[in-house]
Amino acid sequence: MPGKNCSVFGCGSCRRTKGIGIWKLPAAKNDSYKKWRSDWLSAITKARVMDKSFKELIAKDRVYTCERHFASDDIEICKYLVFAEIVSDMCLFPLFAVTTDKMTKKKPRFGALPTLNMPIRSIESKKPPERPHRAVVKESPQSRIYQSFQEVSRGLKGLKSLTEWSYKALEDKVILKKIHNEFLLPQIEVIVDDGLGFTVKAFGSTLPDDHPVYLTHKRSVVNITLKNLVKELEAYKLCCGVTMNELNGKLFHHVIPMCTTDEDDNSPFPNKGYWRIKGCSLLVCDDDDDGDVCDGCGQFSSSVKIANQAKTQRLSTPAQFLLREGMEFVLTERFRQDSLEEYFGHQRKLGRRNDNPDIQAFGYDNNAIRIQSQVSCLSGNTRGRKDRTRAWEQVTDDPIPCKKKK
Image 1 (tube, rainbow, N blue to C red):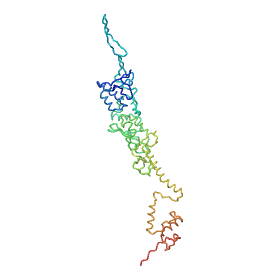
Image 2 (cartoon, helix red, strand yellow):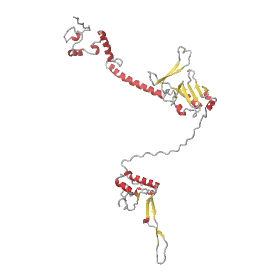
Image 3 (tube, helix red, strand yellow):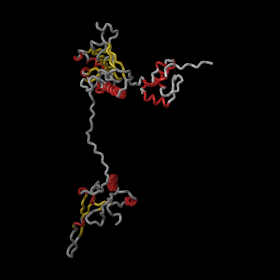
């Protein structure tokens, strides 16, 4: 009968097939049944074209699916009891139930979907991997090390690790300094404000905002004690900066004034200077792979080195080739043909023809001169001669006499 065939593409089951149950889409009684019907229909239409005839079957509720596409656990077998009574001549027997094999019926369990013997696409799209199950993160409030600014001020007196440090407690801030005898500025200076935030300076220059000390402890003594902060800063060393070859807008000069000694009496301002890139970390770890240089200064030095090597190779390679081929002199970019022409033109204007080079100085040999003399007109003071065979030998450097005025 038309419409009572299995709607799965490629399946030939129908009502006439013996021993195989065929079921219609579940009716949308409520929301749960409506979702079951939608999932069932989407499983059928994954590998099937939604043509006009199939849309009409859906509209008329005549879409069927056979039991070949359901797992055995998703099928329920129901038995029906038939009540009958036997009447005889003598007495009337009571009703009793009778069951046979033909009185069983199969139906899908609630929520079951067709998954077996389904058509497969020629190019199956990959499904995204399942997200791993993660436990719910429990946020526990972090305990504050210092509750107030007064507690920070009171805690300075009992610190034994500040033997090499000097501290000063003011109303709105606390200043800790580590003095080096060689320099006038403190080697490391820590300033804690009344908001429990801290700022670190190295020889008078403030550390950048992206320094690991700030990022690790969120730039607050709420997350670290002063003892551990001082111990951590002492493990750092000063960045050596970069080598200054030429002026660059990316660099700044970090000058550290030094204490005067008897040996440095001749120097009016003894100091030690470092050229640094803007944003230099100033303090680097001892176990850093770049040595005594921060990442910013190291990258700048590498880029300058590569640029200088490329420039040297670009300029020196042609010059070395020409010198190797036997040329006595090679003109560089500072001494070009334009400069020569300008110089010789200026000499001609002054009348100093003796300073002008002859044609042999420019690399012409006798054969080239002989060929040119045959195809070009004579120039210079030829003394009125018209002989072309030895014309070049007869040309002198004497100026041409001026015509006499009549």
